[in-house]
Image 1 (cartoon, rainbow, N blue to C red):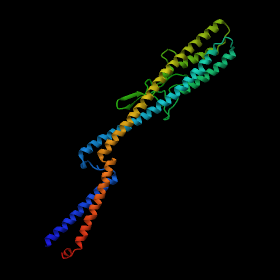
Image 2: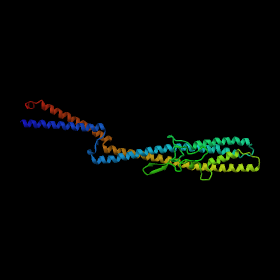
Image 3: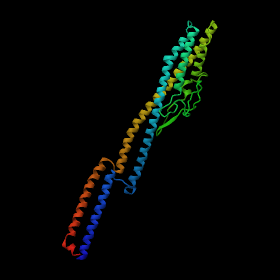
Image 4: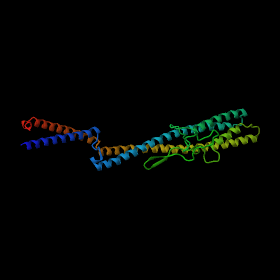
Amino acid sequence: MRFSTSYMYQRNVDSMSNATVNFNNVYTRLSAGQTLLKPSDDPAAASQAIIYKNALSDINQYDTARMFAQDALSYEDNALNSITNLLTKNLTEKIVQAGNDTYSDADREALAVELEGIRDNLLDLGNSKNSNGHYIFGGYNSDSPPFLPDGTYVGGDKAITQKVGDSAEMQIGHTGSDVFMSGTSDDLFVALDNAITALRQPVETDADREALRDVLDNTNRSINKCIDNLGKVQAQVGTNLQQLEQLGFASDVNKISVESSYEQTIGADSEAFISLTTQAAMADFALQASMLVFQSMKNTSLFNMM
């Protein structure tokens, strides 16, 4: 009889212990918000979860890379617009005025001063910085001004490229030579300096006027070539910005899918949460029941006789 009572006692102790372990196990998962807490819980699911987690890490890295690329291209686009406006709305008009045969030497000197101001503005735009303090048109030499005061380009000879997707890499900037030099022997700053110098020379004879006209014509051609070149550069910048937008949209869709798969794998999705909540209620009920049975057994006279 004592053996039977002892056996029943041990069975109830084991039952209550198991109920306690199960209760703690379920509530630990409920508190963590997921069913998979360690690889041994489900080795196959744990392995798949690592794959999804690495995929999410890659997605986030490319999201950051695209944000950097968009920032760089947006700053460049703003600078290019300012340069284009300065060339088309200011500089071209001044060069046309400079060819007016009725202008005096004093008039031409005044125009030379205005051209110097435009040149300085262009130089400042050529040395524009982005939000990180890097020079936009310096290529990979972005820590120092790409243009010297005399207009000489000393920046990098290669434009910066950035990997913005699993199989997508793009140019996220242009060098100063890409922008201001159209492939001819004279760049824009050289052409402007020549025009400024010519305007400051006295014009007394027809030969003087012809010489000035030749310089202004060459300057005008350089300006037009630069404007054409700027149009091509801006078109590429616009295309890249559109591509970034498309890649971002595709990434958002992919991220939602991978996150959903990851949550399902580790049991952190809404369906798993509902299941955990139900299990927690059942575990609590089982624990309370086992404790009640144990307490009832303790209070029996048979138990007290031991």
